[in-house]
Image (tube, rainbow, N blue to C red; front, side, top):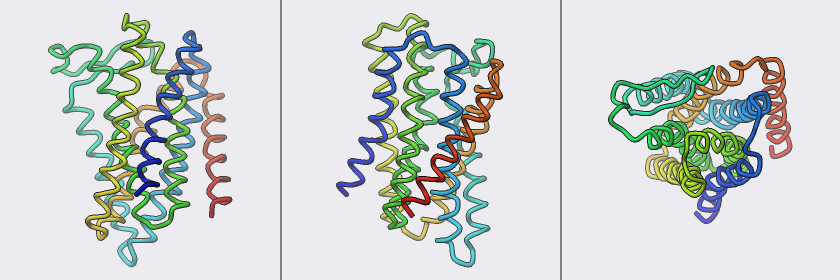
Amino acid sequence: MEIVILTALGVGGATVIGAVIGFAFKNISHKFSDIVLAFAAGIMLAAAVLGLVLPAIEHGGKFGLPVTVAGILVGAVCLNLTDKLVPHLHKLSGGVEETHPQSERVNKILLFVLAIAIHNLPEGIAAGVGFGTGNNAEAFLIAGGIALQNIPEGMVIIAPMLAAGIKPKKTFLYAALTGLVEVFGTFVGYFAVSVASVILPFALAFAGGTMLYVISDEMIPETHAHGSERGATYALLFGFCLMLVFDVLLG
């Protein structure tokens, strides 16, 4: 349990570390931001496939493949529905803001934080679910991958909030709260599979599906929206290969 607590704090704390770096480098160019986010996407992609999807098939026995496919699709659909139902706001390419119909009644700052939290919660759950396999090396691969991608994510969320007129202290607080969401998610994922280990294959696949959804729906389109798609593509591949090397070494 101590390992899970330390992992939860590490995953959430990585966002805070990124936020501190973000304050130090407030004027991050689109090109640098895209490359950093693409690197994070590559790390997430490897963590999702190597640490969640493949173990889901392995732990599912003879029904591993159908259970895993179902889990991935359900995870993606759930995050898609959350995206539609929960009022939030995030940037699209060209700086255009997307809002949902309910968003006008909610504080703009809260909307921005909710947008980040929506996608941080399943990452935390993924980190916690990983410990349900009993393979700590595998669990650390997932948690380490999420923590690594949280650092650049924490970096790039600072500048938009400061530009929106949010005071530095509140900006840091909001960034820290998004990290706290992942701490909460880690415990949710861990206790869910601890109480009912029979759901482990589906839970692994579900967490993998949510991560794959975020990568495809949010991260890749964003990194390809400002003319740096070639660098972003190689950054994604580098992030994926880095996690592949860690997987082999830890294995």
